[in-house]
Amino acid sequence: MNKRAQKLGLIFLLAFSACSKKQRFKIGALPSEISISQAKIENMKTKIPAYGIVIERNGRKALEVNIEAGDTQSLRVGQKAKAFIGSNTKPISAKVSHILRAVSSETGQSLAWLSPSRKSSITPGQFVTAWIYTSQEKKVIAIPKPAVLLRGGKKFVVIKSQDHYRVQEIQTGISSGKEIEVLDGVKAGDSVVTQGGIFFLYPDFKAAED
Image (cartoon, rainbow, N blue to C red; front, side):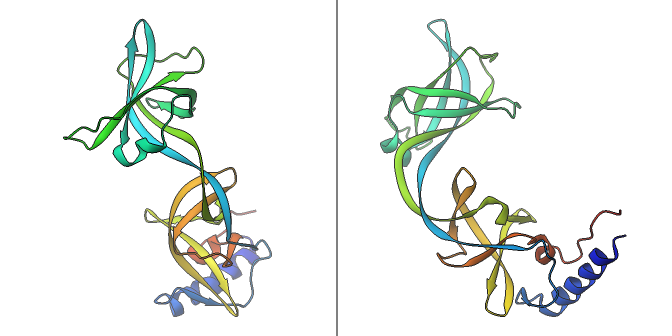
């Protein structure tokens, strides 16, 4: 076991035990790998979630997807989309080809159809999840994606405040490039740990053996 990593693990384990209620950690011996970034206001293009199935229309394959009624006002023919077909983790490119803005009284959703941008090995009946990218932008609080940590199905960041660090649960929204929107838990100007935060969220973390 790396002695330095073992010592750091012990330091943070003791800090976590003493401060677990407030999730607050005094600044002391810290791993050199820690880096900090400030949350900032940025413009991000919005994207609309959609899901449905692969169908065949007029001899051509298309993606028929459900859209939440509140999102249809931002939807336009020709908008680009990324779609995941079945269990395939590699998305295919598509474009909005048709929109049915009428809202179903049963589901509260509208329908849209996406046309794959190129020939793809998709089969009618396959399940589809997709992101449709709009031309609209909105100002959001954004932080680097590596700052977001996961534990127990929840998302957290580590925030540096004066003489201490604290673990903060957050809610996230849209993402763009290397950054992600924070809906709740972080404000503009907060200093978040972008590297090394795992030592705070998982104080018993140990590095692999040499």
